[in-house]
Length: 460
Image (cartoon, rainbow, N blue to C red):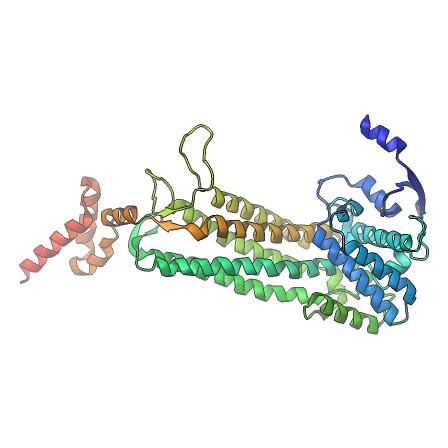
């Protein structure tokens, strides 16, 4: 009732497009196109991400500058668009109120592109005292969207955003790698039971174990750095379908140059604009790289969970920092909460990677129409990974310690010495002693030493 009453008395303006007329809230900076989108898509309660919108606005600002430089757009109109973009970029607090559409929207990213066009146009016109919805002197399509299409700008902004998100992710991964390296040096001489198939195998050191994790992270860093290069080839300038319609070669060249200067990366124009709009293969490869990282992080997290299990009825060889009580009913229980959260993030990332994989294979003919799902899934993958890896580093990794007493106890009572003695006593004899130690609950090391003394005595 309250919502109905609010809508009934809310001031509106009438806007018109090729489909007819529609009421738009008078205080809204978006226009009729966005209003239709809002009427169609109320699905996820997730909005287009802030960074993505900021990058889209920066791209619009650059297009206005380049169009004016090439005398395609009136200089005064370009300056108005630039002022509107600067005004938007300066205010994060009210930013998201201007851009209300759902992240799940019509295909190709047209909904997002047109929402940005309309908001910029209305703010630009307001600067010169023109009412919202008038679209003069600045029109969303004719001026803000000049030399562009959703087909090239939307995937272009996805790549721009991804290359920016690579920076904090790689920084965080490098921090994790360096910390694991320090731990491997710190724990280098602490011997422990090495396990295969979760069974006693050979003795190794904690330094050995941590060094394996370090190398795993290092390989992912190197792979991500290679994959990141795919983001440098941008489809901007391809316009609709990659057809190069309504744009000159000079504008295409200037756009890439201006984007490189604005964002600080050495961007390149697409080698094939038709591929740039019809395929999301590059983005799929990025998602797959993040999926691969998730697989390795799950392995490390689970190793740490196993090694910290207990404290009395598990391995209890690694001591994790306690971050919160582990139970509402079992007093004193402490869980590996950070590692559990890290695992959940990795599972979510793998699900998002599968989404990108499926949407990539379902691109059809000249357009990857499922770009919004791909772009926003990729955004979420980067965001979740960067935040969770920082949590892991700060709340868990930095404070990991070794339970030396329990580690030594497990080592002394284990069967890791079997292989070491097999070359001296023979495989069959050692296997017999292992079986005896297990069935009679004896110390294998003591049995082996005793057998060795007997052999040395017989052959002395």
